[in-house]
Length: 188
Image (tube, rainbow, N blue to C red; front, side):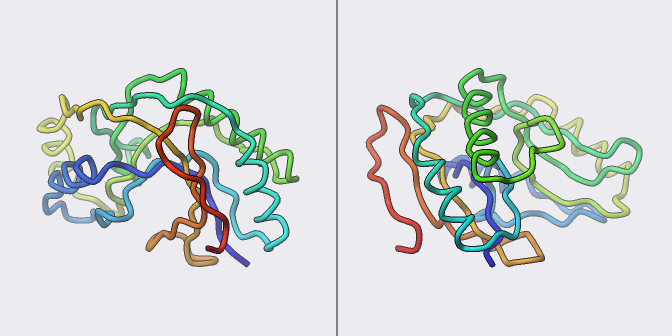
């Protein structure tokens, strides 16, 4: 039973740039560079039939290539921060892509996503983090920006069942309209 989610891979230089932000912060568990991504729709631990149906629905998404850029570094969790993440510049195209992924998931019978889509790139998971160190890091990275990059495809990722986390494996790639990429099949 695969654990699947759809998302966007990041260009190598963007991943390298984000990884270079890593500094020792007590209580922060940094995500490995190869596992940095943007999640569009989490499907969860699903059987192969449902996985194939989800992939088939994703293959029907017909949206144009678009640009995206990272803006800012933030935390989730309020007074007990849980996630350190890089935010993304507001993008109607990214929002449309996320809505299309939600429709694809619902078409295959997956439960509606309970939370609103908040596009981000998880940089570190936080547990009993040093608030002063985290605050200093956030202040130092407050103006972080990446170059704009072209989103030409989205992918279906798998991760270890029941555990989540990397390493993530690209199971299938779906080009956007205007892309120079070629479609691959689930299980190739």
